[in-house]
Image (cartoon, rainbow, N blue to C red; front, side):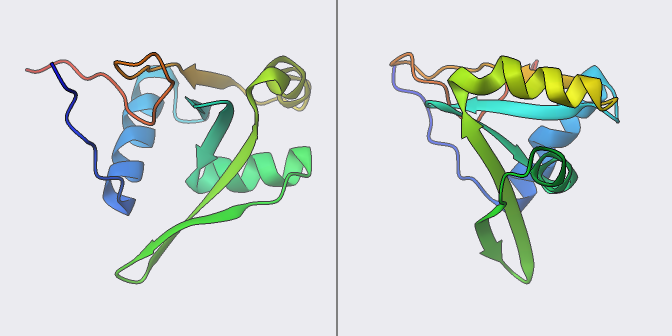
Length: 112
């Protein structure tokens, strides 16, 4: 069975970040494992960019909304996570995989 393609929009980014923060705490920095990188968005992107000195990148622009992303290689997660923890931040990761096993930008939500 083929997975449905997710249209990544500013609304979708706000939604998935919001759901993760509801699960793990409003102050948690949400790191999404996507392919061979970890990505964070919105306020988390600005914090991670500043604290870890990693430049933000433009992710998308739509209807006057700009979304930035901060990315780092997946194999550097532990070191960056330690640094963020030492600075007083809590982190959580999303490890959702697609049907081919590749990490994707998606969260699983219960269908209520």
